[in-house]
Image (cartoon, rainbow, N blue to C red):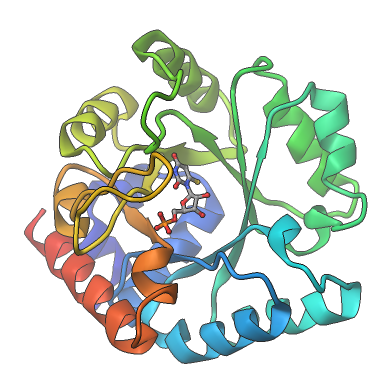
Length: 264
Ligand code: S5P
């Protein structure tokens, strides 16, 4: 199966090379799942990656939630991800001015040296995108940015006009791979897709196969609905890492998203 055939206009309209890498991995493994590996030790992270690696297309981390972080221990996480052909997506949600964001790409965690993708809020202004890109430039690497255009959490302040500004920043930057959308609401996802057009990715958290209310304000929708509404990947955390059988869970999310993509 060729990625270009499966993804159609998304493949042909997308410019960012990492988007193509993602789409290829998704087709190879037949999954549109990005694992939100929200675990607190590097050993647990490595174990989970090795378990579910065959059923996921990228790995999303929160490096600052890891209790035993060290450069050496983190290298094990990165190597495990690479063994499974996963892009490394650090969900840093940068939000400061451009110059500070550039510096924060380095620092203790040195995100610029291992992350292929990061998230950023648009709140401080459009220059955050160039700041982050300059961070990768400092280590002669190229990465991709996802701007938060919507959020899955209840009561968030990302209004319709904020979403529009975010899309217009992303549209004018080659560094922006796409947007985070609200996977708990198919209506919001399809409205976002309409505004974004074909040329950028939309990845959606707020997805769970048992779509009950999450804790602390998280909201959930069904993975197939998010994909059919125009999302290109579902970001799944608890649905996999809190499951009694993470491998079976990852496979179930993979199957749901893959068949939804084929009917889209
Ligand atoms: O609006 C958002 C944006 C993000 S990136 N809502 C989210 O939940 N996320 C992230 O997705 C969040 O940081 C977490 O890592 C993941 C959702 O986890 P789950 O356990 O609720 O599936």
